[in-house]
Image 1 (cartoon, rainbow, N blue to C red):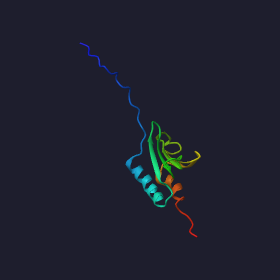
Image 2: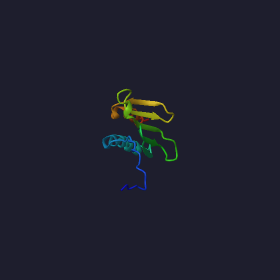
Image 3: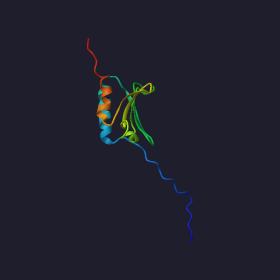
Image 4: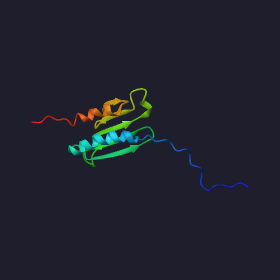
Length: 113
């Protein structure tokens, strides 16, 4: 006997790119410092098919100030991590997340009058 299933078999789910726990630890460490300094107030995480994005906001209703992106397909070319500014300009790119995030740490250092 043939038994027909009432629901079609789902097509294969595509893989999503996501940040690993250690990567999130590094990003959230910097995020915490910037929140304590009063610079940042909100964040969002998107896990898509080819890219994972950590968006940083000054206020929740605005466009992100910065985006930390992870694109594993660029690992052997330009580096899988990048920091993108509000205007879409890539500020730093590379394979070492801590080194890439240093471009944002410089924003924390200010001169004191």
